[in-house]
Image (cartoon, rainbow, N blue to C red):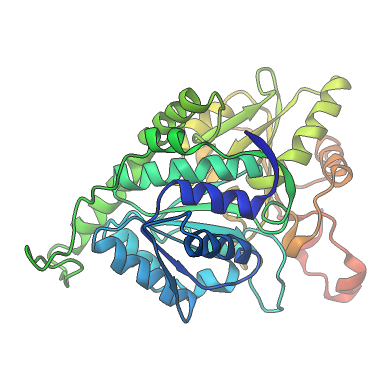
Length: 399
């Protein structure tokens, strides 16, 4: 049933309906409302049985989840920004041990300088930690992805990160349909762990592995994550049959049937992008948008297929790699390495700067007008007056 609710509260409600047995929480904006709401649901008995752990740090939160998951419990936590970085030591442990932990990342910039607003630099910094990474375009999709995340995590025995844009989604109040308990139960059966630490049947997990087998262990871990490319569409279809709502999957396309120009992006910025696509379509411009919902593992075949017939690709990135380029843009470039279509790598919306329809329109006009060099990183809405004329590096100058 649709109801007016804050995105964070809707996520907390759907996580509760996934029946986690352990929630480990440490507050950090902008995810705090999620774990606060879950604590209330545990306190009132609406979420039971569930052990709610108030830990001393984000590292403690994920460490507690790792221990609880290894002991056979369905586990959940949430974090953002520096909190995710504080977990960095434990993130590969969860994936390397094959533990189905689910975590919400309320995407937020990382410092210095301190900035609490939205971009994707936190999740991008941990893209190689071995977690499945799913990005929500809307609050409705954020809710839907959490159900699918628990299903995927437990079928594959891998941890899943659901990324939703901080403040833009977490604090937005809108109409959201949170699936009813019977629907979630039908999609997500009781947790049966593949491995469990049990004193009655002692085993060792996470033991030291030397050079003679470490490569093979990592190879198997990579193969296991690639299995998600087959399973994610299956789970999305099951969810659609249960709810009548298409959500999740690997990649989404919008007005791409005859497009010669494509905009590729992740997260809430797609709302503005699609509005601009509609406007340009009305003006006769053959343009479309491609949504990357699953960033890790990278859906190479699906992205390549979606962009097979375009003449140019514009990638909007909410983060970049200092001294190198962008993460999403580089993956798109590698995917299209055999294509002649130029890829325009654009950094936009860092630290919460709004990516407006007017900005997207101006960018597309510049690209179509030949005023943007595809061989250079382009920063959208860059205020060169703040940089100072003499300090503007060549990276930012268009030829």
